[in-house]
Amino acid sequence: MSEFLQEMNRRRTFAIISHPDAGKTTLTEKLLLFGGAIQLAGTVKGRKAARHATSDWMELEKQRGISVTSSVMQFPYGNRIVNLLDTPGHEDFSEDTYRTLTAVDSALMVIDCAKGVEERTIKLMDVCRLRDTPIMTFINKLDREGREPLELLDEVEKVLRIRCAPVTWPIGMGRELKGVYHLLEDFIHLYAPSKDGRINEGAIIAGLGSDEAAAALGPDVIDALREEIELVQGAADPFDHADYLAGRQTPVYFGSAISNFGVQEMLDGFCRYAPPPRPRAADARAVAPHEEAFSGFVFKIQANMDPQHRDRIAFLRVCSGVWRAGMKARHVRLGREVKISDALTFMAAEREHVAEAYPGDIIGLHNHGTIRIGDTFTEGEALAFTGVPDFAPELFRRARLRDPLKTKALVKGLEQLCEEGATQLFKPLNSNDLILGAVGVLQFDVAAYRLKSEYNTDCLFENVNVTTARWVSCADAKRFEEFRNKCFDNLALDHHGELVYIAPTRVNLQLTQERWPEVRFSATREHG
Ligand code: GDP
Image 1 (tube, helix red, strand yellow):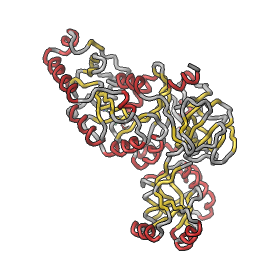
Image 2 (cartoon, rainbow, N blue to C red):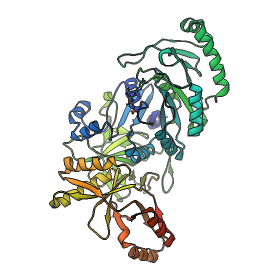
Image 3 (cartoon, helix red, strand yellow):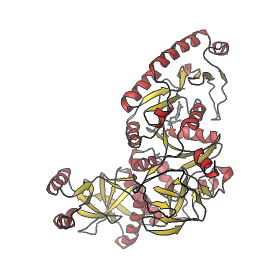
Image 4 (cartoon, rainbow, N blue to C red):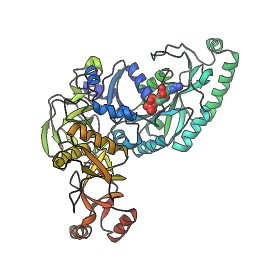
């Protein structure tokens, strides 16, 4: 096999989905520990510099107790190269999460064993289902009293509509936690709480029938466990790799992220079963990862965390071929060649100077305003990857400057913030207003804060009479012109220059849609 194919086949690119507080951050830390190396995205000069550079902007995150930036972490594990794409936990940043999920090949769902399936998990699962993303499940916080494991699996099956195949099974819970049993490999991992967060060293002993297990667990526990496992094997689906890859079945692991218990079993299973880079849909054709010509798409734009560099980083997922430092690529939307020389890679520490990226990898491009979310880069072919959405915002505010002389800086700041995709800018055709749309109210605070700290413009966001927005288009140019004239007062241009209908009420939107059946009103705008 060529080196290229070997490298591609080693890649496992995934994101963790969970309801806030289920333990995503804690589990991420443990995974990085197993990987033995960490390098956070946006940290051009490595970790030390990044810590130093956690700008005032990060202060806001700390104050709010949220994480608004997300990052890419790459680490080797066994013979795999794992790319973990972090997603913001706060629901006001859900768009960013949705788009990140378009760039992964599989997902890991974390569930709190006391709380079971929660509301955000349901939504994220719906997003994963759109592309039949394979999902592995980690039921967390076993060191605390939780619900009955079978009941939890039943809830996942009913509420999330996916079959469960338990791979590990808890032996007790909370204070009674004794270990986990591996159903596929018939071994027991005894629980020994790890105090300093190190990799758990609890003993691995032979399986259910062994004297060793009987001695370690005692006669009552081993009898109960044998009975329970028999019951589980009768009630639950056996693991089926093809069903997992098709998104029909989720393998389930139990553990405690905080005590680093059960994590290794899950990570081993992940590296064994999770899919390598998958093909991607583009407008002209599907692109297979083993194609040798480079291609990739941008799924996220983020402000550079280093305050010395006010540029933004565009995150590109490599879909096929190899990216090599200094190579030229075609920026398909602009229709021209660009040199992507100083891209960031998110390699593990010991391979810091790697200047290649393979399918499944993410590279960070410095963006000075020419890259947008959804943009495709190729080695020449004019194709555009599809499926990276913009969602119509649900909240709108008018930006008002305290110092009217700063209008130019404000427009520039707003346009750049909007490129990151979390907020959208609308300029009504009939006024000079600048209207910002967002899916979550926190976005306005973040925007105001960043406009002040990064663009030195002090602005307020005040209420405006807009409830919802729809991108509009029409096959009949003449009719569209009539629509434009009649609805002039409700039309605006978004920051890509596309026409949007901004409605004061839902009823108004409905009436307008009924009046103009030829016009298409769209709640999402697909990039590309
Ligand atoms: P996130 O919001 O999903 O990223 O969750 P965090 O990783 O920040 O965890 C939320 C809280 O749960 C924190 O206080 C963690 O210390 C705690 N936590 C995470 N994993 C475990 C676990 O396995 N057991 C217990 N008891 N607490 C945990």
